[in-house]
Length: 210
Image (cartoon, rainbow, N blue to C red; front, side):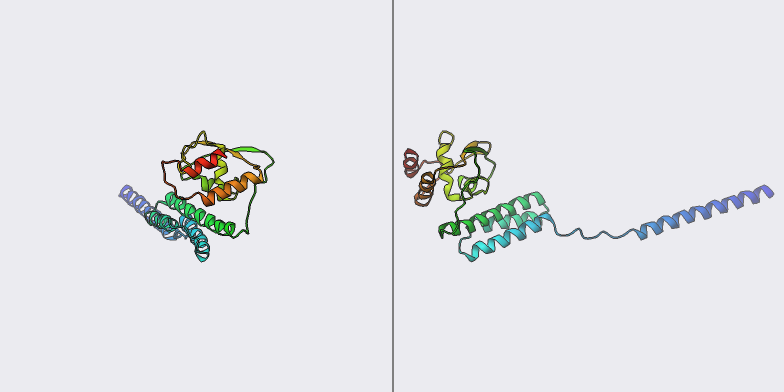
């Protein structure tokens, strides 16, 4: 009888201990903090920045026609949860809007950025989405998209059609062109006329022949 009483007593102690552990575990789960808001997503920030730049370009009447379409694609990608695609598209829209604003001021004659590098030659590797206009407009190149003919002329052996370049191509960049070369390039860019992809325009041939 004494042995049975001891066994019952031990069983009661084990049951009590197990219940205590269970309650403690439950209390820890209940005490776990709820997830907190980590702030705006990268895509929402990129889209907001793009809209801000587009508003500037639109106020000047220089917003490019395709920029709005790119932003809509960015917003659609964000809704689907594709952050990387949304950010990439939003940044592309913002870049176009920035160049449109720069185009406005260039045409007003209030902005002209010339390269500050002392080196006469540098290089640029083409990536997807690039164009001669876009490359020339980069602050690290000329800061002026109208100077794209300079790149075209310096790489005429690599570029068959000024409107068709490919990722992976490496272009030579004249970082310190003469004023006459710059003026000629800008004049050609503004007076080039109609163009189509896959064909070398007569005006381009005439520019290369100068």
